[in-house]
Every structure is written in C-alpha cells, then in structure tokens.
Length: 440
Image (cartoon, rainbow, N blue to C red; front, side):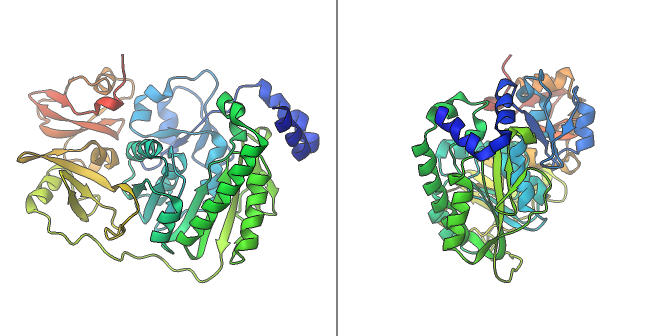
C-alpha cells in the first residue's frame, strides 16, 4: 500500500491528509429509490430510518450507520430500492438518459447503473445491458428482473463482438470499465491485496480497448460516458486522453453536474471527502447529426390465440405490448423496440417471461409480475411491509387471502408487486422462487 499512498499524495497534494482521515471512518453506504416502482416520498414513509440525499443523483440517499439487513426487507425484495455505493450513481447522472433513448450499458454487472438507467427510461426506448462474465451476467439478469424493468435486453458477450453487431444503434452508451478498484479499498480488503502498479497499467490497456469497441455501437451525435471506481490517472485521464487522440470525432462535453472535482475541464473525480467512496466519470460526445432510433423489425411469428387469452387473464390492457415470441417452453414478451433478427450477441433474456408451457397448460412466470404495476393485475392482494403475511410469503409459505380472490394473483407490498401465487378457498399457494426466499 505504500506505493498507492505515495501516488495518492502526489495526486491530492494538500488534500492528502484529509483523504487519509477517511480510512479511519466507516465507509459510505447508500441506496437508490427505484422510481419504476416507488416514489421517493413513498419510500421515506415506509422505512424506519432517515433518508438523507447524496449529491450524486436525485434518487440517491445515504444509509445511516447501524442500519442492517436491508437485503431481507420486503421493500428490497419488491425492487423499491437498490443498495448502491453513493458515488456510483454519478455516471448515469452524467449520461443524461431521456425517455425514448436506446441505451447500452456495456460492462453492466451487477446492475446498479443499468437499473438506474431503466428507471430513467420508464419503460420507453431500449436498455441493453451486457456482461462478459457469465455468472456475473446472471446476477445482472436477476437484478434487472427484481427492479421490474420490462424493456431490457441482457447479454453475455465480448464487447468487441457485441458492438460490431449493434453498430450505430444507441443514443447513449455507458462504459463503467473494470478497473483496479482503488475507490473500493475502504470496504474491500481483497481489492487492496490485488493492487499493484502493473495491475493499474494492465487495466488501462483493457479499458482503452473496451472504449474503442464501445464507440462502434454509438450513433453519430450520441453520448458516451466512461467511468471507473478508481483514482489512478493512468486509468482515468490517461485512458481518455489516449482515446481522444485516436478518435478525433469525439470530444469531452459538459454534463452540467455540480458534484465532485473537475478534471480534463469537464470530467469529474469523486473522493471520500466529496461524499462517496470514489469515482471518475467523463461525458463524451460523438460529432455528427443525431437521429432518433426506430423499430426496424418485430417478431413476425404467429402466436396462438390461447397465449393472448392467457396474457389477458392475468393483466389488463396488455401492459408490456404484443411483441411476443415462444422459445422452447417459454413465452416471452419482447421489448417493443427489440429487433429479434439481431444475432451473435449472447442474449440471455430480452423483455419479460410471460409464462412457461407445461404439458397442456401455461404457468405464469415471476418476472412478468415483478415488472407489472398493481393496477394492471386482474387479481392482486396487498400487504403492509411490516405484516406477518408478507414475511410469510417471502419465506415461501402459504398465506390466507379473502375468499373472493381466485386464480393467479399478484402479491404486493404497499402497492408494489413482489411475486404471485395461486388463490383458492381463502388460501394462496406460494409461487415465490425458492432461490429468492428469505431463510428463517
């Protein structure tokens, strides 16, 4: 660590002593409200601790020291919030996502920034979230599902291959690049033990290669944000300076933010003294005339009317659209703006799974209920976050429901869907996935 500290002293100058003091304090913890499911005011009314805003995004808050086991909260299970290091939300704030955008998150696991983008899109446009490591891609998929994002594609693909296949499609691209993780040292001793100057240099080489892949997926006039959770100049200013010298069609752009410390004129550095563990982000604009992406091709396969009848038996007004496909035993509602003709991209899932075909019947899938709002569910039961019923449901138990509740039924926490069951004779048979259940 001595070499790291010498480098930080050179970087920070007079602020180095203040930086060191933070290594004697607890690290920052935060959450971000998922506005796809919950408003900020609603979450404030449901938690039993004070939510204090971070400077990095409107939906970001600090978790007070002493608050624990949030991962077991019914509010976490229903996707009302995502536990996220405060400064990690800064990159998406700088990306400036707008409704209707096509957005690529190229290095997306575990999903904090992707789900932040998904909330900004509010079901419009398209979110493509990619992760090259398979087991991490599966974690990403689980978080996309929990947060109720219906317009996402999750893929497990090499950035080079993916961005060539998706050439010029996206309005916005986020490259939250794998890095040496210096900003995580306060909470991750493993990151400390893996650190070396050689590792920093190898990360910088890989980051530049990823950026040079990512540029291909961006349309003319589009925006790309590069971010890391490290402090090293080689991985931050060094990578961007090299990228700009090799790609004169890109320029650094003012993201209009007022947090962190400016570098490279408009880029942003965040240190613990600034309210977060550590982050770097810069907004780049690709020169040229922009254009709004449009749908090029929808699924044209013939869908059995019985499948649409099943869809209508669960939800009012087909809230996820009608771009359906059947893959083996799964019925999938594709995002409206997804081109099924795209190949060789390692797609794990596009959209949500409506159901699974089992013999001569269809069983609903957890993901479609997680993405649905209560008002679109034909049958729903709603429990308070502190109720015995919701805790029993999350443990995998049958629960009592009114006698007039019948059939497949959404289970909600203060109006937010968390799963479903099948109701009959005043009892609800539990369909909450076993791998998600809370152990007693």
